[in-house]
Every structure is written in structure tokens, then in C-alpha cells.
Amino acid sequence: MTSAVMNSKRYIGNIEAPFIQEMSEVTHLMWSLGWDELNGGNISYLLDEAEVKKYINIHESLRTIDLTFPVTELAGKYFIVTGSGKYFRNVIKDPEANLGVLRVNEHGKSVEILWGLREGAVPTSELASHFMSHIERLKVDPTHRIVLHTHATNVIAMTFTHDLDELKLTKTLWEMCTECLVVFPDGIGVVPWMVPGSSEIGRATADKMKEFRVVIWPQHGIFVTGPMMDATFGLVETIEKAATIYNLIGVREVKQSITDQKLADLAAAFRVSPKEGVLEL
Ligand code: 2HA
Ligand code: ZN
Image (tube, rainbow, N blue to C red; front, side, top):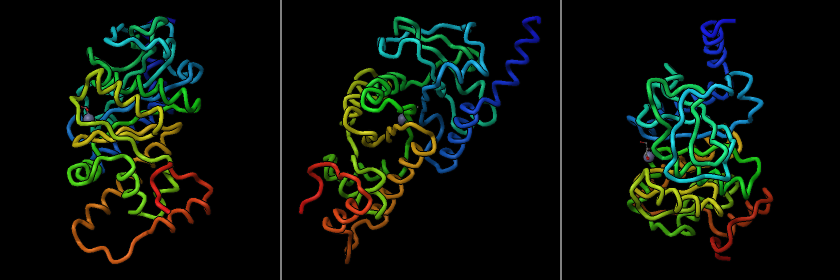
């Protein structure tokens, strides 16, 4: 078979890859929710070699990109990522230009592009935060796969008016809808405002990921992690819903609420353990 034929075959197969479909669908959905304006937001998704191999020639690297931060723990691992400066709105129209499949090299010092990121594009500007978060989440959850960053509108708004104390923020979110405690009993981490795209914010975020699946970047957005796209998207959707209710209530008088006792009853009924220190009983 000539390489031209192989390439055209590969290209047709690629677009059908379930992981490309999932990335296309979720980026479109998030853009349509208004969370990912312009080039806002980024996703990285850890893939199994066996799954990648079905759709992509893993023996042929298109390009190599050096990392400014070593990730030896991720050596040999495959990811699909959104591209730096790429718009979520455009992913579904042209996945190959806006997404990339890559493999971390054996020393964890560079990544090999195996598919996508056409025309010299590079992985997300938040790759440091993504990779460092993957490392920490994999230590606490071997089923972990996804890191998703988005500019969820109401979460951002809430970080202007609410105390940024993790326990207080967690409690407020739990109080906003009955399901919240059940969905994220482990609570929400927060880092201070920092310059995005840096290794420093990557380290700070990953440090929180030792304890939390969710980390808020004040006045910027949210990082959410999980083993599957549906559940990871669902987590940010639930938190954004709670933040929306918080913002809708605003400064109006609250006449009834979900008390700490009700939250404790809920946790018992759904057999979840609320993060220590949040409820006062
Ligand atoms: O531009 O969201 O944090 C993508 C971002 C940076
Ligand atoms: Zn961002």
C-alpha cells in the first residue's frame, strides 16, 4: 500500500475515533453554554494505547515538541488535547486542526504529535496544569482520565463576591441545590489568582488535585477531573448550576435553606462522606 493511500485511510478512520467524537461533542456543548468564548478552555484526555492504535499510526510521529516542565510519571502515555489558541466553537467543524493526539516521550521531556494540530499548532497553553493534575489524580484514582478547564460563567462571577475559603465555598455550593453534596462530597479546592499558562499555576493546581477533583481559579474559571467525559462534564455542570443559583439569590433575604442537619441527613441517605470541617452540627 502506498503511503498516500495509507494516509487517506488513516484520516477517514481518525474522525470516527470515539475519543475524537467525545472531544468534538463536549467542546461544542461547552461553547454553546457560553463557557468557552474565543479560545477559552482546554481539555486533555488520557487514552489507552490499544484504543489509539485502532485509529492512528502510533509508529509515525509527525512532530516533537519539548516541554518546559518534565513529566516522567507520564512517560509513554497517550492523550488527546485541545490546541493552544484554538476555539472550542471550531473543534466540531475541523477536529484535525483543533485537537491533537500525542504521546509523552520515554523521558517525559517532550511530546510526539501523532495526529491533528495541523499546520504547526501546539497543545493547550495550560498543558502544565493539565499534565501535573493528571499525575496527582492518577495517584489517588487509577481510573482517572480527564482534565477539563472551562470559563464557567457563574463560577467566575461567584469568585468576585464569595469568600474564597475552600470550606466556606464548598458549603455554599452544597446549600444551593440538594444534589450538590451527593455529586461532590469531597468539596472544591481553590488556588489564589495567578498568571495562567505558567508552570507555577500548574503546580498550585496539581497540589490541590491531591485532595480535590475540582479546583477553582478565581476570576478565571474551573479545573474539573474525572474518569469519563459524561461524569466530568456533569460535575462542572452541577457546580455551575449551584453557582448560578447563588448569583440569582444575590443579596436578597433567604427565608429558608438546606440546613447543616439536612445536608447531614442527605449524606447519610446517599452514603457519601461530606468533606471534614464543612458541616457544623
Ligand atoms: O486560552 O483558557 O486559561 C485558554 C485558556 C487559558
Ligand atoms: Zn482559561
